[in-house]
Image 1 (tube, rainbow, N blue to C red):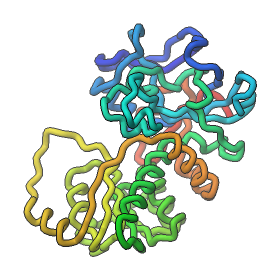
Image 2 (image 1 turned 30 degrees about the vertical axis):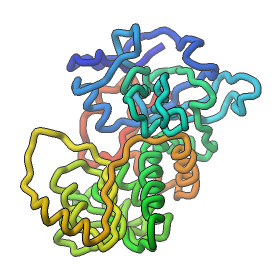
Image 3 (image 1 turned 90 degrees about the vertical axis):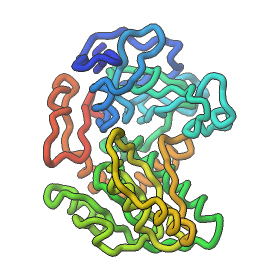
Image 4 (image 1 turned 135 degrees about the horizontal axis):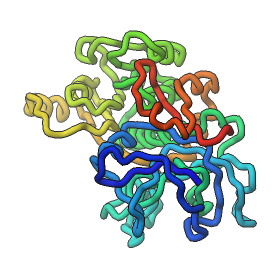
Length: 349
């Protein structure tokens, strides 16, 4: 069968290759791959910035954002042939640490976890794959066209859960939310904010293309100025770009008692001048919280399923701006000005 692969640590190694069918010991459920979404993580792995092949393999199958259809499932598993499923990306470390043992593998403490298509496990950009039932989340058939958005939705589902938990430390009645970045994660973060009944402001540099319309049709407010210049003071801020200057704004432009969640991963090696004393004074006197969030556990996948189920299906469909057949994978990685989410189509749902 065909799979999209790279050789970890080797640039320009991206290729479509024939590989063996998934071994039975990879999981008791056989899944037909339907699609994978592409994101910056895939680009960085292709660029040999990181990525780790499974033990005994010289290559890594790409793809962590995924959707598939069950071909075979064991009796008593609550799964049946024909079910739509998404594979959970991160798997707990084998020790396990206390967090992984508690099912909170997104908070792994020793770094021994594995991740499909990223670290130590083959990804989902292949015609068939296997997983155990507990590593799969079932989707309603109505989400067949947009279920590939589930994994990025889990990232912001976790972020919002953590915001709610932190807010519960004291009086918490958020009214205004800011999201920086109108990429897929930012738009999905805004979706969950609107679903919570908040006034949502989304900041991005793009002035044309689909992003402004997607934000407006969500019922949120689109900005092309900076958060500083806008004067918006939010109770909740979600940073989804990783751009250092934007991160600083998110950390310094919140309202009293604001909670800021950082989800964008920044590049390193560049310096930015900042008045740390002023930032500290504002955070302390304003009872503000800044925290980072990455990955998701099963609870967040289940929350994301509910969020997508409540969303307007046509709006979700507009996030997917290009679908590229697996055989033409090279075209998928050629950036188009109008791209929001690009999907590699392995098979029609």
